[in-house]
Length: 134
Image (tube, rainbow, N blue to C red):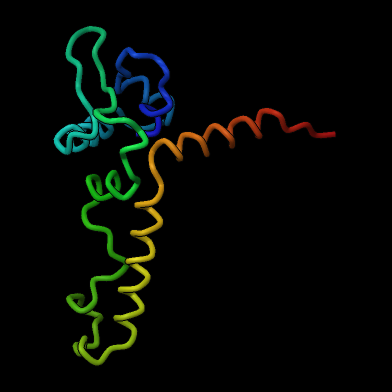
C-alpha cells in the first residue's frame, strides 16, 4: 500500500515492480493484493500495462484498515479465550489492561493515514540521502 501511495504516476503499478522494490515474493504479494482489492482498498487494472492503483485517496485510508484487512481483527491477546487464560475474566485486572492497550493501539493506527505514512517515509528517505559522514 505504501508503494502504491508513493507512486506518483497515474499508470497502475505492477505486482512485479512492487515485489522487486520491497524484496517480496510476487505470488505472495498477489495474494495480498487480492485481499486489498476485495476490501476495495485497491483497484486492479487488467492488460499488458495493468496493475494496481489505490481505490481511494491515501488520506482516506488508515493503517488499522489495511492491517485488519490483511491480518484480521487486531488484538494483543486472546484472553479470556486462550488456553493460558486464568478462566476468571470477570475478576481479572490484567484483562482490563490488555483491553486498554488494544484500544490504545487501535487509536494510534486509526490516527495514521496512508498519506501521513508517505510523508514520514519521504522525510526518512530525504534525511538519509543528505547524511554526510566525515
